[in-house]
Image (cartoon, rainbow over all chains, first blue to last red; front, side, top):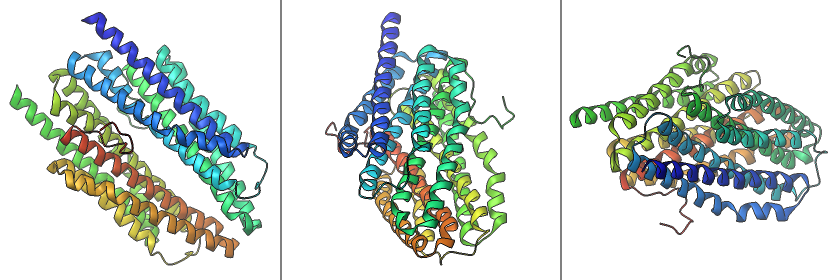
Length: 221
Length: 221
């Protein structure tokens, strides 16, 4: 019974990582649909949304079954609760990739507003946060999870910079209002991806250390 | 033991509803800080953020304790998993209220861009979705939960309308770019509140009917 449970947990972890890799690829492709003006990449992201959604349901069913059949305690219980939340964060990252893909198709109808400098940097940062939050889960690596939390401010600063620059373009030239606004939406989506990676890193810390780090300003821990 | 567990579940439900009422009030006050140009309301929202975060941690701890001590099955297990997710959606709605409060303080530095017509409607709609999703949980009311899902499209349509109108203002008059953009961010936050209410309604349906309705396009159910 025990060894069976171990194997089920390992399988669950593998499925979650697979879900993570689908989602990471979707984000990467969606952003490159914008950066490389590649409409086919945007279409690829849209066509793969269902696979991510199916995976989310499969993982939730596994979690539920293990909770019901095994009634796990302590670290295993925390792991299953963490997986259940991480699963829903991953699915929402997938939704953000879909939003970016939709923005890409609209942006491509306009001439390019400006050379893309901060957007690729912001995207690399957000993608690395997602990847590292999952690596932290696999390795039970608290330092890596903490480093994801620390990077969220960088993402927010890049977002502010992108907003400021694009709003200036809009003020100077009213003909770029629409495409510049779509680029702002892309930056908003990348910001949310960073937020979800932060949630995942917090769940990893909760699972590994049994600590709740979500609201450090509160004096309770 | 059984009756004790019943009482714990009832208490948990009451705490979740209390969290819901804190969050609803925060959204209402934050939006009215914008609509009524009332900076004190914005400050009130910011000062109450900690209470919401503390409540989130308290509810999570209750869920964990009940899962560990009672090893519940079927409907009780689904209820606890649903509460755990709803709790995190409520906390994120609280975050959106904080974002709106911050936007309010920035918007108040500029003359009003336009009379607010769609924004109050969008806000009433989103607030009612949050309220009804929690009412659906309390009453186990599937129809009410379904009606929340149905309303998400209305919120998205209002958002599109608000975006279009404000972008037109920006194109016509570059001096309104900043405050109009802040109003767009407020509408984005209200859209996300509608999304979270939708998530809550889906969790209610999962808890009551044992059905996963998150991805209706998938043919699995």
